[in-house]
Image (cartoon, rainbow, N blue to C red; front, top):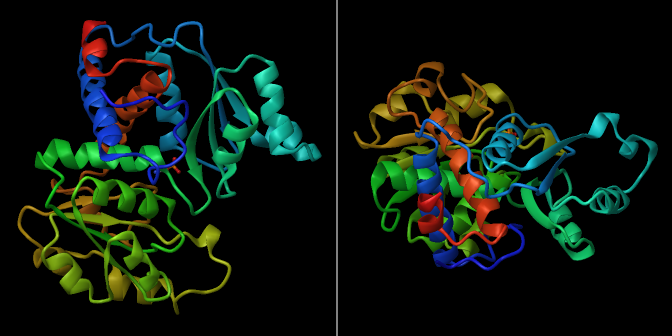
Length: 314
Ligand code: CP
């Protein structure tokens, strides 16, 4: 077992052993989820605040379900109804949550580095649920879990990440996780959204979508992050779909065992053809299901849990 961290702030600072500890622990929690009684007392008496200052469906709800399954007391912070609207700072907001005896703060924020900042000014555990275009560590962990479950091994796999890489926290966290676990990662998309600077993270960059798809074991699609783009990065959505969208003709030229992933929310008919999103080789909803076990594992380990053997003994 290799996990001694108080927080989960990013994937960049994790070792491969730490990532594998989360994945092994998540596998044990997935088995717990198949029992008649799905709850364990691991976080009984602990208070968790879900501090989501940016919209979320999958991450927020699966964190909340994970906390319920771990028997925590849960508070969901609603930014729109909070004193953030009256000008209170993030630091003061978080300090007040700590004064109310929060043990964990799960934060999603538009500012890159917000979780790191809170981890420096608070004594609570901090979990990054997505910070700007920086990182989304639990998304990368659930993606790695899903790939490992379907393909057995991550080392040696070809993973193509296709879409808006520049503004994607999911891309950054996945690149860190997959390269640490030995996958070969290829990035593809419009040149304005896939700068060659990403090669420094150990990836291949190509603007040839057919080449990027041909050898891929996993095709990981990303949506265009309009909310983070400050200028037009390509001529039109229609042109993006024509040049880079995953359609049936393109997918037919991929390997017969290539699988499709997407963190959601998906834009049907833009980055992915409507029918492909629901086809038997799409893992999109499996990713969501696995997010619950992965987030249980993360919270369990941060709380001092001893890994899969302890989960199995519950
Ligand atoms: N994948 C993801 O982060 O989705 P949400 O924004 O709905 O949480």
